[in-house]
Length: 276
Image (cartoon, rainbow, N blue to C red; front, side):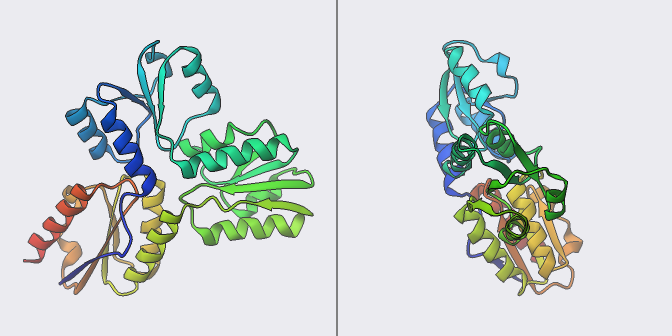
C-alpha cells in the first residue's frame, strides 16, 4: 500500500508562533487550551510546566497568562489587564484581524455578520469586538431570520470552507445595497484544504489527524470524505483500526493546523506497521 502525505498539512504559522510563545514562558498558564490538540497541551505541561486554566478568576496579579491562539472576548482581556496579570498574547494574527474589522466596521455603523460556529472560542472573541448589531450565522438560510439594516459588513471564521463563505456573501449581496466583504479565511486553511482535496481524489483510504474539537481538522475530514468515502478523523495512532486498510492500495494522510509533527510521524509509523 502506498502512503502519501498531503502537499500542505499540519502546524500553521499561528500555531507555531503560539507554541514558541508558550515554550518561552515556562511556569505560566494558558487561558483556555492554547490549541485544539490535547496531546500537544500535555507536552507543554510536562516539558515546560505550562498549565491550563479555563477559569479567569484563577489568575492573580503577577501571574503569567498566555492567551490562546483562538483569542478571548475583549472584556476578559481587559479584566486580566485590570487585575495586573502579565498577559502574553498568543492570539493568531489571522484571528486578530477579524476582531479589528468587527470593531472598526461596528464603529462606522455597519451591522456585522460573522460566518462561523457561535460556540467556537474564536467566534466568541471576534463577536465581542462589535459594539452592537452583530450576528453569527452558519448557513445562508439563517440570514433570512435576521433584521439587518442597509449597511452590512461580513467576516468568516478563519478555518471555514471558502465555498460556503461565498454562499453567505452571495445571499447578503442579493438582499442589501451596501455589503463590505472581508475574506478572513487564512492562507494555511486554503492550502491545507486544496491539498487534501487533491490527495483524496487519488487515495482509497484517507487519514486526517487532529483534535476532535478542532474546527479546521473537521473541515479537512469533510472535504476528504467528499472524494474518498473511506476517510477517518483520528487524534493519534491509538485511534487507528487495522480493518480500515484491508484491500487498500493508496493511503493519503493530512493533518489539522494544531497537529504537531511528532503525532503525524507516530501515525505514519503505525500505518507502516499495519501495512507490513
